Every structure is written in C-alpha cells, then in structure tokens.
Image 1 (cartoon, helix red, strand yellow):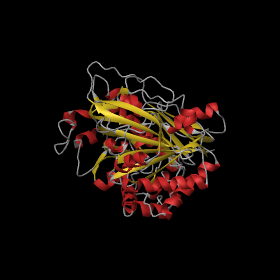
Image 2 (cartoon, helix red, strand yellow):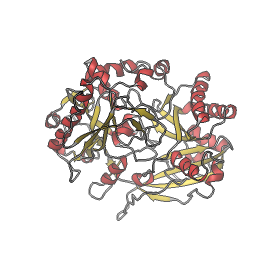
Image 3 (cartoon, helix red, strand yellow):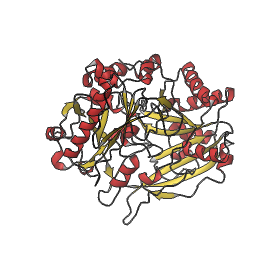
Image 4 (cartoon, rainbow, N blue to C red):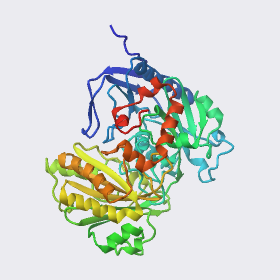
Length: 512
C-alpha cells in the first residue's frame, strides 16, 4: 500500500483526478491537490507564522519529489496558458494572504530607494490578490498606490507577476517591476533573492525567515518571470508610490484612420482630436475591431489625491469603458449570444460607458469575474513596428477570420530576463474573443505572419502562445541561457528541478 500523503493542520491533501483553470480552457489530469491554509485571524503576519507556512510548503514539495511527481503552485488559476499546469500535484496557495509592513529598521544600509519610496515597502504572501493589495495600500492608513496593473486584478500577486503580466501605465514597466525581493522555496532550501545592484533588506530579515540571502541581478531577473519553475514563490516585497487618482475617458466608436494611426505611432495625445489639449497620458488603450474598422480609445490622466476621497471596490460587472477588459466583455456577449460574438461595437452601443470617471488605480482596474470559454493571446512589438504589426494582424484576420478584437496597450521595458515587455517602448496587442478553432488557428497564424514580415515580437507567458525553442532564442537571445543557469543555481539537484518541470517548459526548451 502506498505511503499516505503527509498533512498538517494547515496543509490538506485531496486526491483529485482533474484540474481546470478558471476560464475552463485548460484541463489537466493530475494526482491531487495540496491546499495550504493560512492560520485564522488578522492577515497582518509575522516571521514566525510565515516560517510555519514555509515548512508546510516544503512538506508538499518533498512529498511530490519523493514520489517522483511534479508539482506546480496555483493561486487564482487565472492563466489561459499551460504554464501553470502539471500532470502531478497542484499546490493551491490562494488562501495564503499574510502581509508585513517593511519598516525603516528592516532596510539595508545600501538601499537606494528615495525618501518617497522608503515608507512604501510591503511583503505579501503569494495568495494575496492584486485587488487585496490595492485595497490595503490605497487606504488612509498607508496612502500608497501601485504604479501599474493588469487589465483585471482577480489574479494573485505572484501568479500575475510570475507569468509576466505586462502592466498598463505609459511611464512604467510590467506588474512584476514593483518587486524588489522574492522569497523562493525549493525542496531543501529557500532563499530571499534581491538584485546585487539594488539591495533592499537587511540580512537579519532573511535570517528571520530562515532563508539564505542571495543577491544577483541575473538570478533575480530570471526568477521574476519564471512561471513556477524555480520553486514556489512564497512572498514578494513590493515598492509602492504615494497614492494618486486617475481621470478616465472613453471615446467610441472612432474610425481607425490616420489620426488614430498617428496616436498609436507616436503616443502623442495632441495627435488625435479626441485627446488634444487634455494633458499627458498615464494610460492609453486602443481597441480595434478588425472586422469593421471601428475602434475605441481609453485614456487616463493622473490627478493628485483629493482629501476625503473614499474608494469603492465593490464588484462591477464588465463594462466597455475605463479599465476595459476584453475577456469580460466577450464573456458578457457570450451570455447574450451563446456560441457566437456579434459585431463588437454593435454589441457595445448599449454598453459603452462614455462618462469621465475618477478613481484609484485599484478601482479603475478592478475585479472582474472570470469568464468561461474565452480566448486570449497577446503579442508585443516595439513601438516603431506598431502600425506594421497591426496591419499584418488585420491581413491575417481577412484571410482567416476569427471572433477576436485587438486591444493595444503601451508600456515600458522590464529588466526581467524573459519579460514580455521586451522593447524600450512596447505595444502589447491582446487578441481577445471566443475560444474556438478559429481563434486557436488565428493565434498560430499571427506569429507566423509577424515572422514572415521580419517583425520582432514576444508572447504573453500566461496566455495562449506558440513559443518554440527557436522562437524563444530569437526573442530573448542570450537571456535564455542566463535564465537556465539561474534555475540551476537555486535548484542544483536534478531531482529538485524535475519537481518543477512541466510539459509547457519541455516544449519550449526550458526544462533543463
């Protein structure tokens, strides 16, 4: 009779035959699920409580390794790719929601953060939702904000960052660029990782966690976007900024004409009559319906905090407007038109929320209910290639129509070795729509067409993508070898690396 799977008061094992993501687009046979439970009470935590959680996570990792099984940590299970899936054990971390305020006394003498940054560091456990991060730090108690976010904030902070979520602010990089320290757990050791060029925490902070402090730029920049393959990321330390507000406007429908093309190519708001004279942009999104040539502009402008402003984080159903999320709107369409999606902006006429709005980043990019049977892939190109890439994608849609819309966002480059934000100024095109054979075919044809035209691109790790070893080498060059070397550093034992391998990595040449 096989040995029973070990359990503790806060670690529960359940044999489970099948795992599915939230969107019901990824299904995988598995051995079972380990659920890690945070001790009841105030989520503001201590090193002692975190150490107990670390031991439980290591128990789960070792149990899988000793049975020659693979393991993958999962938070909200939001990812639309197979990056976070294994054929062995799924480790459910979504209940691990502890946090610690990093104080001045915790900071290393070499920390280079400005006086504005020093009061705004927090450590969050891996199961904390981005929505929960926003709600905590934007409060009157802490008066902080994130610089950027994804389209929605129902993901865990670690799940969203580890898959390279690209962010949404013109002047900032990816969501993971908030992270300045990573608490990473393997089977036998665990580490607190920082950049050598940017030390943050005193060695005593790592010692209190029982972790080995490792400072290396390449190692840190590899672990930032590693989709669960370096071990289990237990905690992350985020830098935040003083809180602020955003004023959002939506303009739709607008033609995809020379004015809009100029806006996309230059990011100059004065190049488009709808935005001219309104000031500098914090956020710009252009959503294009390739079937009709209609488009929508979402623009946001930064405002100083208003005394007495009270954020509202109540759930709001998907609307086409500020904080627009293509998956949410497609999900709404499917509710009304099962099995099809009508002309996008025809559907949108009664749904577009064109009234200017003011709110925090956490409000603007709020929680959206996960939608089922929706498809999403994303490609990123340099701003200089933006119009050419959109023309290529439109041509692919003419030849092989798919029920998708193109949502364009613009962000800065990230230093992570396998960052989706690979270009100095990156245009991200989210291809959102129905999950069917046409969409799956379109995703494959899209990257082939970009390659044929000689357009350099990357693909979102957490969405449908067509990466191969050759495509990775072309997209990231020597960073792939640096990433693999970093993985060997924190997981030197082949058996330890094998625990965190999966088919997704093997297909892309990253399982070495």
